[in-house]
Every structure is written in structure tokens, then in C-alpha cells.
Image 1 (cartoon, helix red, strand yellow):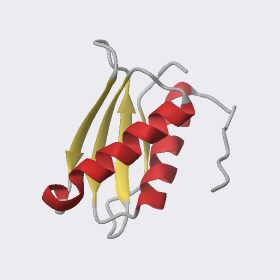
Image 2 (cartoon, rainbow, N blue to C red):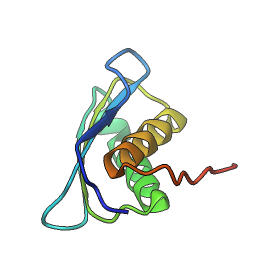
Image 3 (tube, rainbow, N blue to C red):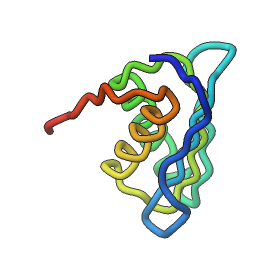
Image 4 (cartoon, rainbow, N blue to C red):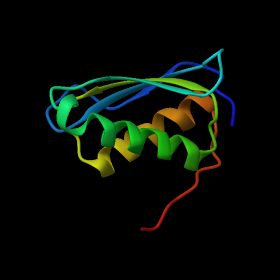
Amino acid sequence: MEIVKIATAGTLESSDILITVEKEEKGGIQIHLESPVKKQFGDQIKKVISDTAEFVGVKNAKITAIDKGALDCVIKARTSTALYRACESIDYKWELK
């Protein structure tokens, strides 16, 4: 899928994450993370975001994540929502796990 506009999902409330997705001209998935737990969980948060982008089918995106203590399931939900909004897609891939 191709990014056609900037989109966001989430909030800056406690236990949530704000995800912003933009088109990446250089190619690939670029992730910028701000989090009070970045040292402990930054790699895991980035992995969840990257895996979600791959699952949705986005290959080129700049993703900014401002984390406030979100669990992995919240990170997946916010990331996929922002990606679908940015691609203006309604072809949702629902995952049952």
C-alpha cells in the first residue's frame, strides 16, 4: 500500500501512544520514537511498529511514535489505524491471534 497523506491515531494520555505516519521519500520504514521507557522497551516498541507496517503491506513510511506507556496490543492497533488512514484504505487485514 502507498501513503497518500499524513495521518495520526492515538492520544497522549497515559497508557496510550500517538502514531503519526507520513510518506517516506528515501524508502523503507523510518521510525522516530519518544518514550519515557525508551531505554528499556524502545527496541520492542519499534519492532511492533515495524512488524505492523509489514503486516499491513506498507513498505515506505516515516512513522513518529510518542509513547506514554502503551502495551503492544495498543501499539499495533494505533499503528495499523494510522497506516490505513494514511493510505486511505478500507481493505483492512484483521488478525486473529
